[in-house]
Length: 136
Image (cartoon, rainbow, N blue to C red; front, side):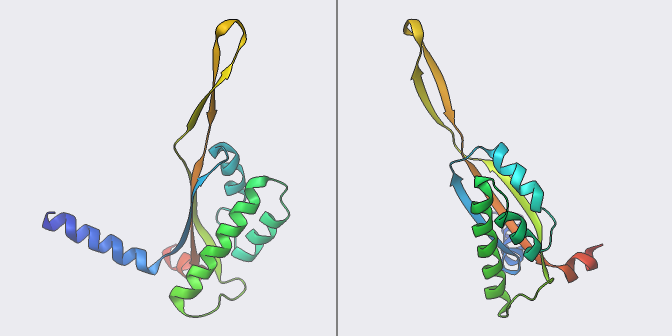
């Protein structure tokens, strides 16, 4: 590995140590359905987002709620203190496509229809509201 690449990798690793995030991989729902729920909580304060996810009737909301609780716990572990009300917000949340399972369904007259079972990966990053104001 070259020096320039190593330096940028070291910077990326150092930045990763200060950021509290959580990832959920290979969720067996389509990315489109997950993005609908992710868009509801993007940029929202953490306690409000937990309320939104708890009372949403989408299946993806339960998975995102658990992921958000994990991200909050990661932030508390990295900062060695409890998160106060109104201190954290969801700075970034994105949904990527995971590998697709391809199946064949029998169809009339000797044909077969393709079924695509989609999955997704979700990454959620929480940050303090103080940092949000400092960046602006």
